Length: 112
Length: 117
Image 1: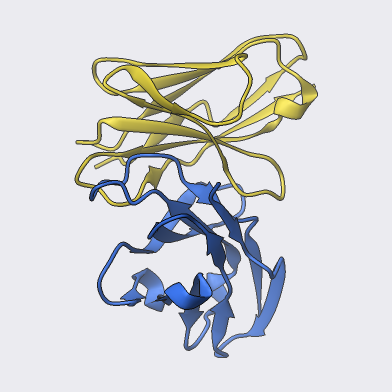
Image 2 (image 1 turned 120 degrees about the vertical axis):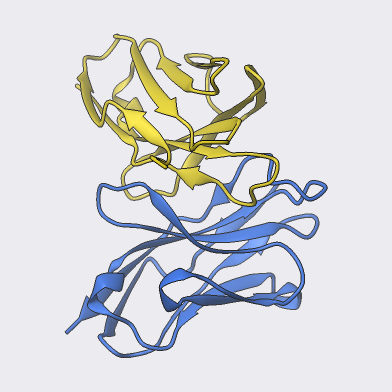
């Protein structure tokens, strides 16, 4: 079992650009959540996808959007990047029978 | 709104010494509680979790945590720390929604653990 996989591992973008991050959940998991972890902080919930729909959303602007595919994989899109979007972006998967989310290794996004 | 407080930003212990990391939460009902560990530049690994029942829960790597409802606390403990335990530890709270773990996790700021030989 490969666990939760995220790609790419590192990314450098210029302010104003758009970025797409990808996540494949742990086998058998149907729910994907995305978190942003700024340096020195705990992870902050962005949103959660289930059955290809956004089920819950944290306090993030509309520049942050996502998608879930029929195979449960997910994408996080961020438009009009700001310097403050530089962070580790974590994907977590779970399902109805799982108590606790399993996290991927994250994508380190640097905006310059 | 739910919140988690980890009062200690940085803790230093000697190898072989005991460890206790503090976590206090604010939540309107009985929450699900978690401890995660994160090594530098890595994702989060689940150490243990509490949902109901026995308030003392055992996790991986010899860690345990005790849920104290009266104190709104969920402190993490280990009787003898190993150098490989050096990492950042996060306490998290999630909604106890009908037996599932749907819904967001709210994390504390984290506690960095340094282990001296």
